[in-house]
Image (cartoon, rainbow, N blue to C red; front, side, top):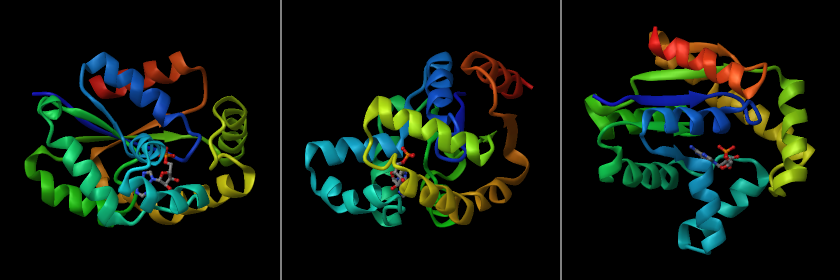
Length: 185
Ligand code: AMP
């Protein structure tokens, strides 16, 4: 049986980087709602047009749009033997929609990366220079952190005893090692 893992953490907390490494190690697809939305925006699709104002402002895209997008992705054959979710669910409503859609094939383990706020802002400002993402400016970053605290952090309690807490400070390799050890225990 493959693994069905969710990565949870503040924007700039390194979850995308770590989710990709775990994905590679496990040979399951990386399902990143943020990347899927950015691709939709770049392609100019209907979904992309509807999502862009929310993404650019650092607000959550409406649940119905995101839930439909991720559900469709998880129904593809390559997700049959597991997946790594990154950025979805982002609130309790999305988590409930996912649980209803997936039944016993829902999230099995949640990895929470802990990083303090000043560090995440610093990392995101660095990424803004490298990747040029429109939502990586300081005002939007602060807003995304607020959205994380208000909407996403309650998921840690929601997933309860299926949560693995990992210190997200250190080198990419150090953090990856911690995650692998936690997932193996
Ligand atoms: P991320 O790449 O995960 O940091 O996501 C970038 C942006 O995409 C977020 O600030 C939201 O605007 C949007 N987004 C990504 N995932 C979701 C989600 N599950 N629900 C709503 N909006 C999302």
